[in-house]
Image (tube, rainbow, N blue to C red; front, side, top):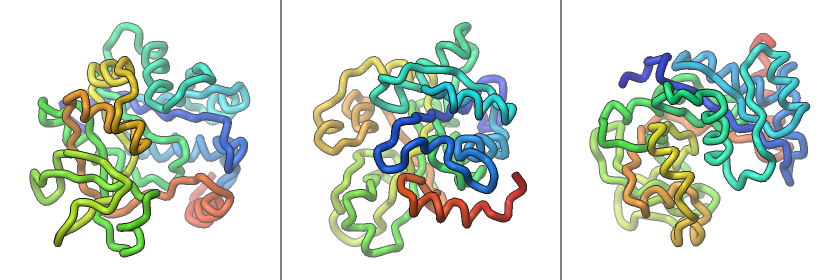
Length: 251
């Protein structure tokens, strides 16, 4: 497995229309394009494999197809993005040719293509089930902010950790770096299938962190350390920031 094995790698972008804080979020205009199309373009720039957007609304479906990207309609009642991408891969690749699925969240219009590629690197180790990303925290306020999820991991190299736990608390204790988790995942297909069939775990429910389900089930998650946290668009203020960042890009 290599990070550029296009034939066996699928980038899936889940897009859920319902949003309490930003209604119609996938279709929000950013530099002349719907946000979900901007995310698909970043994935396209990463150049790691086939790209599919998994949607739950006809308007999103039409916007994505109009932009020339492949799209799959999924149910509206999914509880998580991982459930949505699992339905999408079953529809898009029923023969099981795809071996690795990259889940790029549909509200990351400014994600760097290099970050998408970085998420695949830990899967070079055949023992790794799931790979994800993190950034060392430099802002002191983030260390105590429960909205900033921290990775507790055992260092494998200067750029990689083996995840032991994820938490909203300030951890681990003592001197040393703290790491901000970025919710972009690369799954082996077999690991994704196993993951979605597991019931919600005790720690997952306590921390409201889905990835703890995998750790509690004994699955291995390795974490690549990158340089910056992508802007997630959850509020009107976030949307304005994304518009400013992408204002200079051609639409």
